[in-house]
Image (tube, rainbow, N blue to C red; front, top):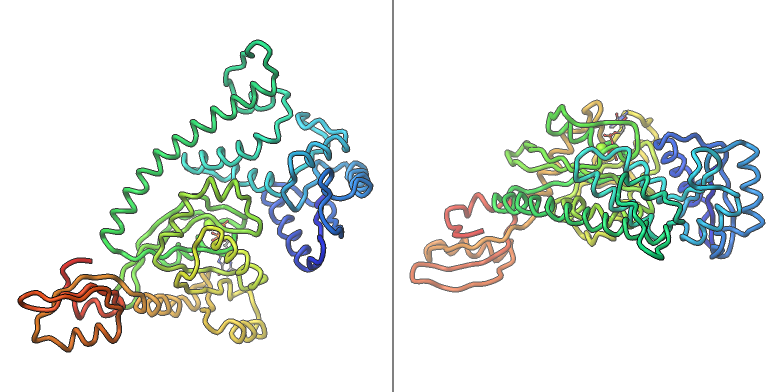
Length: 418
Ligand SMILES: Nc1nc2c(ncn2[C@@H]2O[C@H](COP(=O)(O)OP(=O)(O)OP(=O)(O)O)[C@@H](O)[C@H]2O)c(=O)[nH]1
Ligand SMILES: [Mg+2]
């Protein structure tokens, strides 16, 4: 049973879309939705999320249907979770029977199923532990899940305290391991920066076709593409050659949804930093879905990560799935976007050209020394770039300036650093 809510003056349409998304998430996690309910309220009930009466009703229906879970389209507070479990008379540790699950728990489950690399696994574990810590009920559940963490209870210690302690210890360990991995990653990043190769990060709603796009644009064969949410968790970076002769690095990473659990954003911070460090974003959108809602969700997560105003190219992907009318409509509503299909290759040339054009516009900071007899170069840099510092040596003008990348070739011979 999937349960959504509209609070205050929230929109029904948003709630419906969010609940459909929850259904897709449940499906990815391997669950089938029996029924979907949306309830209107002024605000969440602090004790039971929806009113107690309504909750009893929903739980009764769930029991009648012999449902395995009631899934909430929101993160429940630990108290709400406990109260709802009590209301449903469930034992959260029993193998069978009704379970109370929230959106965060569901997403964490999917991430746990999909984590491949050791870093991905650690990140998911950290997020899961952070989520579980305030939700412990102290029946030794943690210990069995963590497998063999010391079970000895100190004098006067309750099982709950033992569990908490074990979790905290494990969290510390995981954080430390992640820090070690992060150091290596930073080293790599520094190297890349020194090589000054622009980085283009694929961003987009989960299942929009980012990995398929990476495959298409880099002729990379070893990329996991699945019709599932969150199939990619680990960043993959490949070289991409552009028609104008530029080479960039293209990075594919985890997809976004609305209300991406903050524990995950936190745990995946270093992975998501790949996006933050990118020169440019390639935003992949599924044109056969709700384009604006996907784009909004992605913008929101980017903003949470502090990535704003980054140059980007929007690819309206899966164009092979839409009809003429829709195509015309999208062209009108999103004139800046490139309509294409990573699957068939249609429109990909245009996409590459657009990336080239956007890259050419980007400015790079360089330090130059220009001989006095080349005054016209200095003048052009003043015209087209931002001069940060200007001074003179015996032989010429010393400039520190941000210039459009396309000017680099012309002034190459004068560059002293950058
Ligand atoms: N018809 C069609 N299907 C596509 C296209 N691009 C991707 N797909 C399909 O869409 C599904 C998702 O593709 P992925 O490339 O895995 O999407 P993703 O954005 O990497 O997804 P996550 O990593 O799960 O967030 C797969 O079944 C792809 O085959 C396209 O242009 N047309
Ligand atoms: Mg992917």
